[in-house]
Length: 94
Image (cartoon, rainbow, N blue to C red; front, side):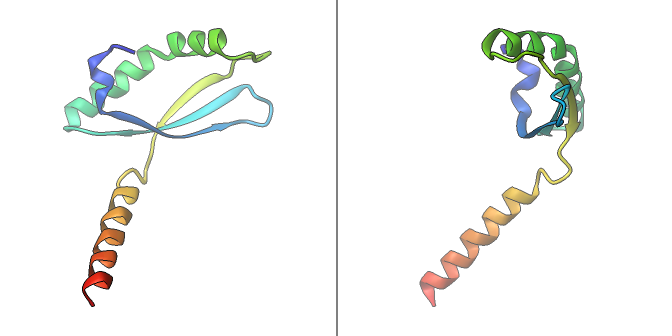
């Protein structure tokens, strides 16, 4: 998508309900609070377009309704990476 408001957004997880009616999409939003709000609004605005694109690209009998939510642990992966690099660095020098 070409919407510049979505540049500060990463999809971190997608879970499909057992009946296939809903896809719960977790996203990590980056940038200032205003940029995060703008990205969230842009994503909600693009919901139908994204669903249409899924229908066009995938061979599914039923295209799931997209439900977006903010990933509560978006900073955790980055923090783990930092800690692993720090531990690796210490191990190399010890």
